[in-house]
Length: 154
View 1 (cartoon, rainbow, N blue to C red):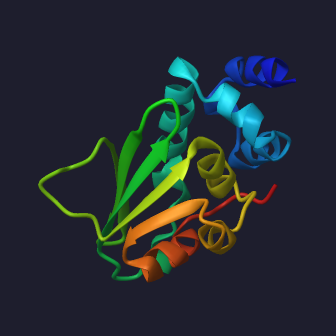
View 2 (view 1 turned 90 degrees about the horizontal axis):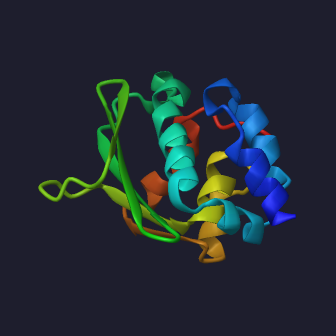
């Protein structure tokens, strides 16, 4: 099954898959299947596409005057870092981590939890309570992040 799932995902043109379609795909996968998929170049493509879309999914009206940098550490075959900065009603995303600046909060989670979180297939509060997501820094900011983005419903 995991090979079928990996093959199906690998063949996707991510640019043409809507967030809702992606949410449905993730909903149909087990954590083990996601772990099988999230390897090598395919993992890079998936993470790149998700973080690349954050700007479009951002809801500036909900962010108000928020000024914060959120560091994402996605663990898996290797640690992937991305930073989301929300300031002046805009959202910017960069790959890697800026060592010269301390983020207001850091979210640490494995590949499967990350995909379930950003696809609306899991509750961030439940994930935190079950220790599937670790938060360093401003826990209140981390718990409210989903309101700043249009998260699909699978």
